[in-house]
Image (tube, rainbow, N blue to C red; front, side, top):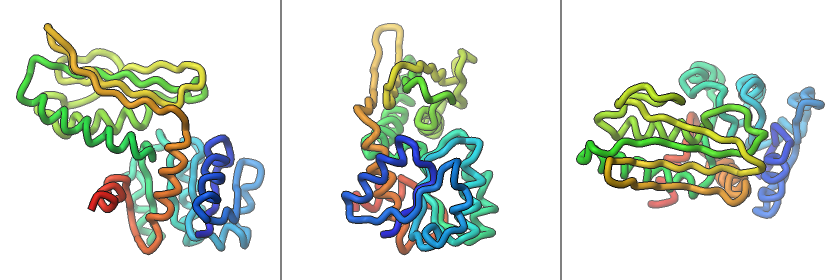
Length: 239
């Protein structure tokens, strides 16, 4: 597969190494200093573009790729939601794969989180709270992964209706955050009652899991069309 990279920081370089190990070819590397390369023959030859940039630039990058008929796999968070760009995707008849976290382990954690939230409907004495911890270079909060976990709890719970970063009533899941050193990503969910607590957590030991998942997602786009998700990919893997 021919892969273009949009964003060539730490994650871009890690994706490059894993893609090459899996037998793919990196045909273009676009970063802030060579945006003109969206029009290069190398970029136009790509089967898919993998995008890890910033919330401020992501949507413009998507459109530049869509205009040129290149499917996009993106791991950038905090730029908005799929609904915000659905019309753009339809307009360009584009293929777009987005998730808040490409780690296979995190996506297993998403499933466990929803299952536990469903169980807790029978035990109203328990109330959830979340902590997410990331490296000091991550400025946005809460993380996209934390938001996805919160949305999973809200979808499965009959008493949690929203999330917030400060206490806001019994119907609210509070998401706390810390920024420490080079922590790749830790998410902890506590269900607390007056007599005990039940905790589930996912701790990333490195960012390689995210990079591998992004390359697997790029492979998954081949022969597929429209809006794709990690739920679809995981579902197909488990068939």
